Image (cartoon, rainbow, N blue to C red; front, top):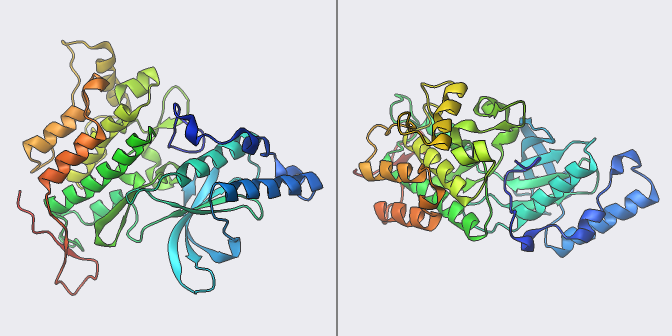
Length: 362
């Protein structure tokens, strides 16, 4: 797994950081005011302008709350003030650690560069980078209703005080947007590696965008498991080949999408494999690596009220042979047909301005 970011592109050199840009990265903090450090920082700023990433002055940012600490930085939710307009927008700000190594800085800049190429309505966008002083920061889109996992838990139809009516049609509407974003990543041969509801954000009108903040968020630390003392992995969302073979691809992302779809249709009431501990989940997935018919893999059970064909889609995503799993074009097309012309309508309820009525009938 990449050290400071989730998205990766291991086969397409078109989106790699140029060598001349990588050579400019140095531990500036150790000599922050030296002519060499200042000159290198200016050259870095020029290179980022050349690839179209806006610079944002830090005085335009106001931190609202901390999301969490990652291995290489801290993530905040903040407000970004528009230049001279007074308008403010909600953003996520990821700070690189002040004592970051040269490799950490290189990884951080690679993350910013890669994210800046992702222009899709269902992918959280890079808004800019702060490089006027250390620590370096990247400013990313963040939507007002927060992450999808918490949103679904708070609006579960089984909760008596649920602020919204999120029915099956809305759940498919959400799922289709996640599939659309993943279809875009697949078209660019980019692997996410950590697709889950915690890594999606929600805005008004049930707009959903794929992000990658959860790895740096304390709230979801229990979703990550250290295998053999290595970097924490999202075990319950991972394909067997990623765990045991270290193989990541758009097909392993497909496996994770099946689990994410299961989460969505279950309102994120439980983590995947709710009756198993981490060792039992690991043993269950190991069954696929040895392919023993006498000890078969136990997939996640069908969510309550989930149609058979939607559950079959999940099972197709969890096929042992990754070549037999559907691609995201097929997944998005299937969900779109199931939810043809559905758009959540504003609720007439007066107790919540964010309420949505769901008119879908399964």
